[in-house]
Amino acid sequence: MAIRNIVTEGDDILTKPCRKVEKFDARLHQLIDDMIETLAAAQGAGLAAPQVGVLRQICVIDAVEGEAPLELINPEIIAQKGSQTDAEGCLSFPDQWALVTRPMKVTVRAQDRYGKEFQFSGEEMTARCICHELDHLQGTVFLKKAERMLTQEELESGSYKEG
Image (cartoon, rainbow, N blue to C red; front, side):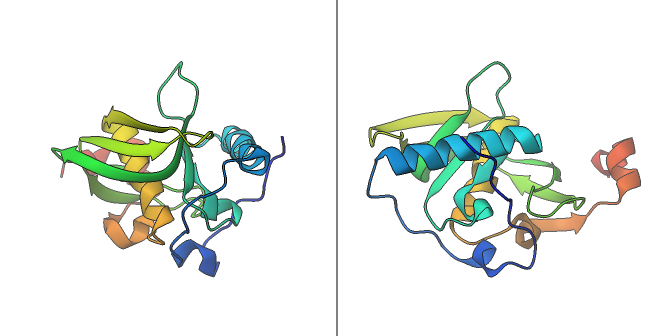
């Protein structure tokens, strides 16, 4: 496994849609393992393949305490319910936070690293992460969905939640 460089704001790859994964092989497994290690090193909640320079529909999400990171290949949201508005950030946009509205619950259909299809439902933070990472796979960054940017003071105090 290896820690990969995370692509940051200004790199065109972050605005390009990703291609489907068609080969479920050792090379794919290595990429996923590297993404999980990179995510852990960055102390993030989720990471999409374009954030490490790969235009493929792959993301890993580590937003459920005590659970192994969720690996989503060729994912699509098949159901969503409710809404939540909260602070959101991104490893590709360090030190930038915005108020973003996302569904409260989502169900996603995806494939695992071996090509087997499965469904997964997540709520609250997990749902937020799934939506954020799937947006990356379409070339959409969270700033495009931001209601407004948050200051460091608002973030630290939580005052954005009151208004």
